[in-house]
Image (cartoon, rainbow, N blue to C red; front, top):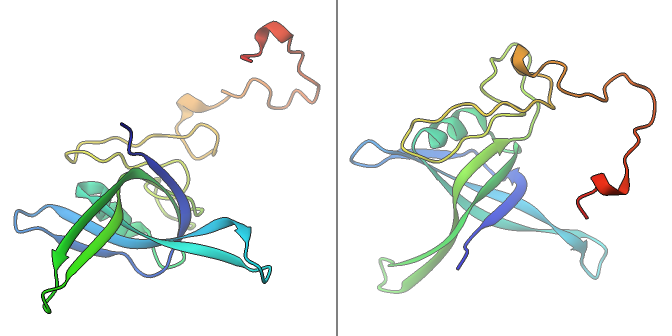
Length: 164
């Protein structure tokens, strides 16, 4: 069985960062995800998806995401329930994020810890920045990796080179 979800949307409010009694960070936010079609009135509709991120990625999400920020989330659907103060059972469906990628351009003067090309893998707090060679804000090791940059001409590709 597979439980995997990928979403791109905008935060509806400021992310909420909390810590468990053991000191583990957890961040909750709601992502507004546009539907790929319009309703009968010709208007776009959105789904509002609750997202939960844990550990160091949770702290990064709380520090660098704001209301209106665009983010990509990859994770799994989680359902749970609890009893409210009136004794009624309340069901909750949310995404537990494994990766959160900030899609807004980074503000001027900021370091390379936010903005495009920075993924936050979920884990036990030891993760590394995942540079994206296509955004242009990475280290020298990714310079000149685009063999087609500046050629100005067409690229010849035979049918044998295509994967389909």
